[in-house]
Length: 181
Length: 185
Image (cartoon, rainbow over the protein chains, first blue to last red):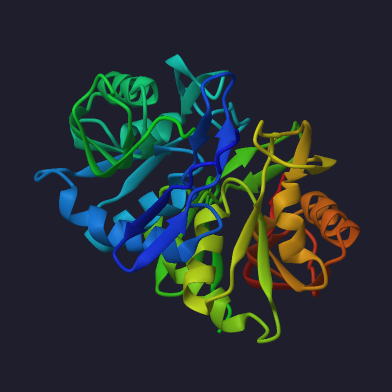
């Protein structure tokens, strides 16, 4: 007997999206939230998230790629500047901070790169870490290490969605299941 | 009105984008060439100003925007938000979840290395038979542009416009830009 695959629809404000899924080994299908290519959804999510930014935050820190348009919108709405870590070295980087991620995203090991002049903008600042989805919390931990190494302090972890039970205290708009059948 | 561009001192280059000005650092990219480094990542005001201005300059008959990741991503988001036209991101690595991806290689001036450009097959239907505007931060050698154009044409789209914040090096009349960056020695 076969059953129809489960579908997951999320609604933020007045925007609803049925999430695409990717197969992950024998674990079933993992729902994916896509902000890139979807300015309407990005705007709706940012509108609700801006109220959740921890008080006292001076700078937002995110990482490429999916959370980038979301963080831009949060920055524009809150008036707080943001800094973005990369996942590859760029030739123009000056004295970048390099940080390994202690977990894997979809089976790929990652390293984060923060350009030196961008790291300067975190120094002595209260920084909120912004992500699209937090699952294990590995990327969030690596971003927190970058904040500390740059001389800043972490104000909190903010994500649009929490997936499963991350090891960190993450403020999120909604929870998502880790897998669908 | 085109942005005002003046040389302030040897190591920075002043540009105006809408209501904001920035001093771009002049950095070497090879032994004989330096560029004024324009990086919109983390610059919300510049991204908003440029995105709003470029959205106004976008031809009305454009159906969809296509942009390479990463630096022009927020720009494409703002142009999309302001114009109501959807945008598609061409990735620089193939993702495990992509379906029938279309790929091209290009040598970039800022990386100096061959760079892969990949369109998810899932996005092909959004480009086929449509009028496309390519969105980028800086159009320099035109290498990235050429490869993106090839990918769009291969899947049956028509490149009807190219919009960028700056052209760099040679003048490019086919590009709708807000300003021009010279190359430095």
